[in-house]
Length: 355
Image (cartoon, rainbow, N blue to C red; front, side, top):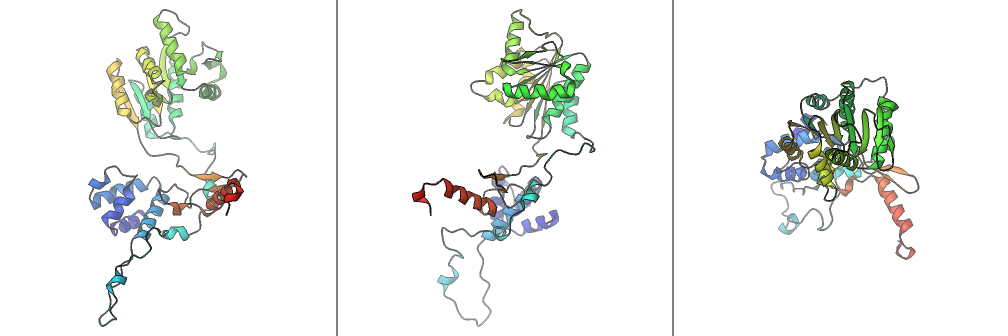
């Protein structure tokens, strides 16, 4: 349905139904009036229109059916029958959508894959803003997974290397560091990229060095004690990927010390999809560093999520009836996924418990 039709349908619903629809979607929805709540729900529906409409129709289908008023001189019906619930307690009726066939596997897979090389890449406004802000300040990037954080890191590194500055890229895992080493070697050239981990030490004088955050912290410790293993006087950019690890009870101190001991001439770029308080992190960086820190944040998913179920026998099925992921109703499960669930349960339960 169009946005106008959706708005009209929402306006026809009681406020209690709108509050149920807002649960898990809109914070403090209980404080909003009906008009304001409809505006917020319409904005939210843009992220997953199919799932939103499906949830709405399910809630509409759950509303008790009001009996039509009896015409004059009609036979009187006892009050006990009129006041009876339209369905038995403990049994929840399935919404209208549960009777509709689910999407096909081809529809669910449609659009997945690598974009055509003929299609020009156009960076998002937040990506261009992050790269521009790195010229004058540290930057914290807090955006959803798949939004393009790596593009910011690559372009910022490219610019720093062009200015004859060293770039250090850190990740929390050796496996991820190895992956980034391979990826960046293809982008910048093998001679321009080195790696320093507990297992590998290759091309350590390269302008772009990949390492774990612990390795960088140790290098900064050594530099503070007069032992120089990697040239830090030319360091122009430090990229801390998966920087939400700063909140880790055991390893978070590594990120804190790395930020504190980072040379003042180097810009800091923190990347994460799951920092819960990015404003606090940006304010903290501003308070301890000689330059301000700019926060780049948005919550719209560039790449929408889709849910599927892969049976051990290799059968793949959409998990829900819709392409998008609905919220909180079992009636949204795809019929084929239900069948595969039942098949797996039958195959794995002890023979005495099978029906």
